[in-house]
Amino acid sequence: MNTCLLNEEIEFTIEFYDVDAMEIVWHGNYIKYFEKARCALLNKIGYGYACMKDSGYSFPVTEISVKYIRPLVFGQKVRAKAILDEYENRLRIKYELYDAQTGVLTTKGMSTQMAYDIAGASSCFVCPQILIDKVEALLAPV
Image 1: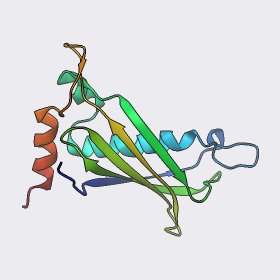
Image 2 (image 1 turned 90 degrees about the vertical axis):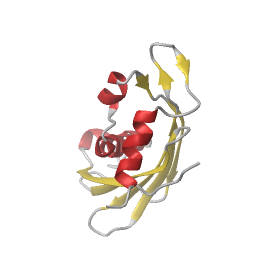
Image 3 (image 1 turned 180 degrees about the horizontal axis):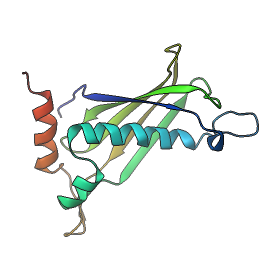
Image 4 (image 1 turned 135 degrees about the vertical axis):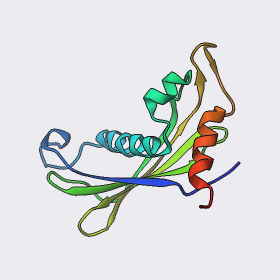
């Protein structure tokens, strides 16, 4: 298993439609924030969801976890970081959400996705070579 520290960060502001009556982010929306960061990371790799589909694969989420440390609130600016933790046998991505102004960590999480061969209608126990090649090209020393 190859572990790397390839990562990507995005910033966004907590919108009113994501909060409850106390202006605190509803717990399920944290998964959406992870997804935003994950999409940015996959696009950085050059293997976003459209590219996955074009190459004949999808990557359904098989596991996800969230550790709530501090609440996010309406109007707060957030920095979301997605860190590629594993990519050879599955995609495992770790997440960190920070208050963008103070740098305080608010949330941590992790997701696991498994490659699925669309044409063959079967799960894959190794990631497609196209993904591995794209990640390793980014990790190669310049």
